[in-house]
Image (cartoon, rainbow, N blue to C red; front, side):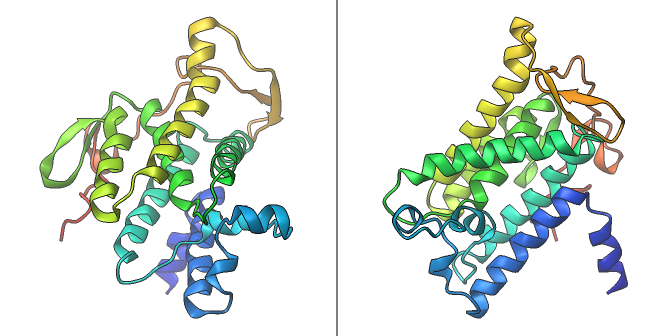
Amino acid sequence: MSDIGDWFKNIPFITRYWFAGSIAVPLIGKLGLISPMYLVLWPEAFFHKFQIWRPISATFYFPVGPGTGFLYLVNLYFLYQYSTRLETGAFDGRPADYMFMLLFNWICIVVSFLSCTHYTLLMIPLIMSVLYVWAQLNRDMIVSFWFGTRFKACYLPWVILGFNYIIGGSIVNELIGNLVGHLYFFLMFKYPMDLGVYFLPMLPNRRGGVSGFGVPPSRRPVPQEQPGGGGGRHNWGQGFRLGDD
């Protein structure tokens, strides 16, 4: 247990609580402590019954069962891996900027789903939006997927979209997550880099001073993660491929 506790404490601060919430809330729903119908985003209840907690609970909740357990674990793995890499890489020392990114993506995702008439879950779209940003900031890194396939990181969100379609039967969540991640990356990195228009510095960071959104990667060096000592190769995880024994 001490090893698990040490591992948990070593997870970056924001990722740690996001990861913990994504385990605790599904467990609460699974045990029946709170009805799962109160944890999903249901626009009618949000607008007409003032159940304003639903966008937050739907971000952490996922219905875990025999048919969804593997999909849940895969996306929990993505959350841990790519949120950690962003928080300790491109956003190292800038937790306010990272929180802004999560908040921006979350708001866009909530607005996208509030137009639906049925209940929805927000865990996968938010995770995919973070993964998309990581993939764009490390777009030329070679990543490995199942069965030894290798390709540039910029293609990873779309490969995962296809993978989740195969095991989950839908691509709506993944597609919205990718589009929201692209919107953030375009507004905060691509647009300023191409046109030289930067957002005003607003948020404090651990290094002192403030941090301005919109400074492109070329002016905010992004550390190149090299897990497992792969010399620039990125294995899906830390030195192993998901699904390996």
